[in-house]
Length: 84
Image 1 (cartoon, rainbow, N blue to C red):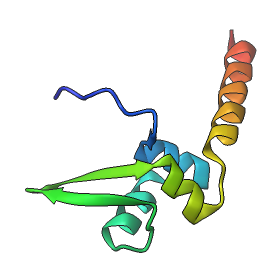
Image 2: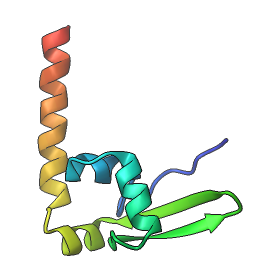
Image 3: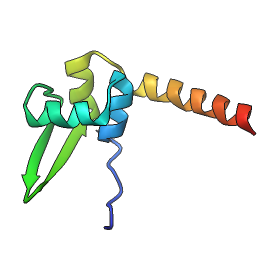
């Protein structure tokens, strides 16, 4: 399956999960049940599609995406350096 390049204004389910310290499944189920309202979800046949915008995620959770993503990049760089 071919994937389109993600918009700079969006978060993936994996990124949202990591920022919240939750599992990807938690994000998916929470969005399907309308308990997590920082994005939209659409059921396409048997599959769900999720759109999470950074602005809405920040508004709902109070977590500043840009700052945390930079911190996570730094941590990943440190981990890679430790294993090399």
